[in-house]
Image (cartoon, helix red, strand yellow):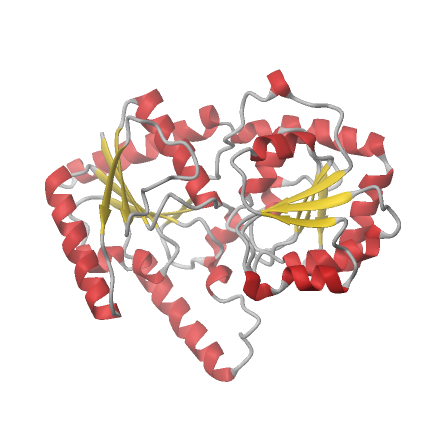
Length: 374
């Protein structure tokens, strides 16, 4: 089967790129798919994660004003579709143009959409308070749902996300863990490190994580909170850290390709996000026996964490409750170990061998349905 993924780029360090690397490589190497990935503006150069050498990469240039951008986008994709003639197209683009793909190109080939973010991601902002902005958000959401209805199938990561797309032909397939054989180098003895992973944005909530850490740092000066992810100087996170005298214990780091080592040595993982499509980093941390504390944001953490069994789910925005759960884990090594062991067991449900057969069946069912309609 010839499968074409369409995305903006694979050179970032985000969850979408991580999942695509694991999933596309599995399909190419384990099931024998002919996998193609299309990116924009050299987005295939220098991928952050490892992709199978069996995958074929394509790229088109889309530049200039919106009109020129759309013209180049349509021309480039139509040319590629004619050249490779895929059996299935899977659009992995959380932007508006991705949601309008069937409107731009039709559905002569079965086309699905993979939504890797909560619908809230498009609307969460510090500047979302004006009436004009609310009208814009309402209009954009209507367009997004209208576009989503045009796909043969719309795939989301959690049941909570499914409920956001009313009237859309949705199915739920969770993300898969990229870490499945960690026992060989697994460290039971962890360092006094609380870990967070993610691109710096208002949505990821690192600003409120700094406020939470302020409640903990003086009481536990032998602990550090380390954040790994693409930095955003406009958020002024480092300035806030310095102003609160937390620079010795709250450390901002650039993304690392050795993130597995960071999971392996950390005692606790935290997710302060305001919204998630899933929470890929949670299952990554849990694979290494790390208990997690996360806000119960829309959507993902509640599907992954079993509250008070392998971690803690905190009412969204309740910084005090978050800090209390974190202190509880910091001060109780037996609780950390118990929850960490449960996390390692529970996260096995996201292994590639459990998730990828679902994708294989889905692709094959779409092909059969398309053939039966001829």
